[in-house]
Image 1 (cartoon, rainbow, N blue to C red):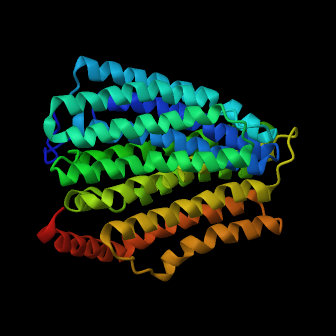
Image 2 (image 1 turned 180 degrees about the vertical axis):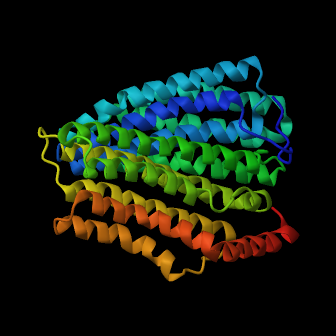
Length: 411
């Protein structure tokens, strides 16, 4: 197993990677549905806590595979088979999400046994892949063995937590400690590899494309959420003005978030400043979770119209406004991190922060749901309008300055 050429032209996602990503469509869907259901039943704290835990677990599994594939994907028969094993692990992880949510809602010890089992399956394949990389090229021996070791230690940590009699708070402390091992493992491995001249040869344009594709998969939850809401709204009200607005605005929301995400390219900076990759990549965990949560929030709208639930307009709007705001702020910070400069904000762009909060206020005073939803949707649309009306010049200039500053000392 040889390392890939990090400067290969026209490197793109493979059909195998796209097939692998389909398992995350299912995992995102389960997590979002569980969050929407928890909100509808009034289990807000359990729903949010479970969703955050689930999304970190899901996205981290994707990150582990995708960065390895960017550096070492040989597409031979063994790589394909081990990818299939990891796909099976993701499916098992998704199966374990409902029991985990249910345990939190009941205030019981966190039931993550099936989730951990899914990770064990994935980690067996992942460690095998890293050992293949270590064996195949001495240049990457140090980094690859460090990756394999850190993955193994982290997995032992998760299995150990299963056998400790921990309440939810104790589990949280343990999970934070094990997660610290998880997240620091790649950092340590790459630093050790850098010292020996063997940092993993991930491809900047390929990895940027992979992240953008997962963003689209997460955006699929906004479509699913809109569909779920539409079914309930049309049953309750038929094809009224309100139902049409809810459906239309849900689609506009998905499109606007997609547009905003793709306004500024990440690959050019990653190509010349590879050290930017860690925080950029890890920051996307929040971004993907926010997108999926928007889909869950749109789903919650359907519960407002379901007589079997007592979900208020304020609850539904808050469940959309908060993740939209989180998405916008996270994307802003990731861009600032890449170009080492905060964008200059126009009054139109500042409305991004104001409108989601305004929507919550409108819902609190009894405004129609469609009006509150429209107010949220205008938030990402304001960014798109600002960009198209001239802000693109400032963003392009920022990108040019960052590239010019990086090239003399490319990392």
